Image (cartoon, rainbow, N blue to C red; front, side):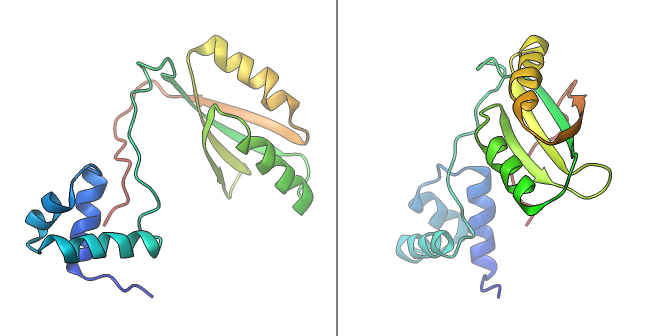
Length: 153
């Protein structure tokens, strides 16, 4: 059950934009004193609305500027095979997001690497080592148009 009010939504929107806001800054923006704002933020964390606070890094500056969306199809579909695939993917640092999807593919991976040579190495030495992958279809990002890192509220 959704137990959020207007002020909770304001706090969530503000924190999505800048998670470095202090309790005092938040309280000024939502017109409440600091203690209730602090308690609300703690409640939002405790109830799972706020999963964690992170810094958004510049992938280009960290030599991870090539983004590839890789669609994976498995050869077979059993619970054990699916769990093994997920376990293998979770261990690969270059995979920053993984979704189980419907349609022509089974999984969608977001992969971040330095360049095409590193992606080739990723395909051969990481994906190539995972059993039961039937096919992998790669789409290379030429330019990022929108990435808000936020949930629409």
